[in-house]
Image (cartoon, rainbow, N blue to C red; front, side, top):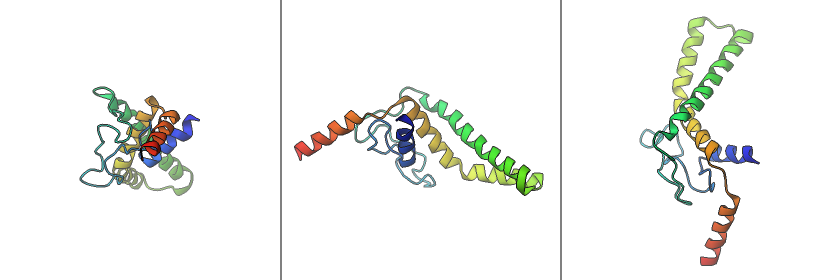
Amino acid sequence: MVIPEIIYSVATNTCPHCHKGKVFENSNPYSFTKGLKMKDSCSECGLKYEREPGFFYGSLYVNYALSSGIFIVLYLSDALWIHMETWLLLTLVVVLLLGLYPVTYRLGRLFWINFFIRYDKKYSKSKQKQMTVTS
């Protein structure tokens, strides 16, 4: 069941390996200080997020796909139902894409890291057992 694990990790901003530690320092993407700042590694399992230099360049393609999806939905809804003026549609698209940039940026990175790192149930359970034994 890979898809639900990816969706859970992306939706909750958690480590793709253990689903415990946070990937971004702040849960709010619109925070001006640390909204787009990623942690170097997971606080729970120690997974290093940037696998190699330039690892997250591929997330730009995911971000592009998300932004293109937003544009396509807006264009089709305008062509089929709304029928706005061209300049108004273009303004709406630009404002919406710029406003949603922090969200698509984070989603792109979270999806990208989840493509390469899988959730390990055994790690999560063994870590919980260790914590209960030592407590």
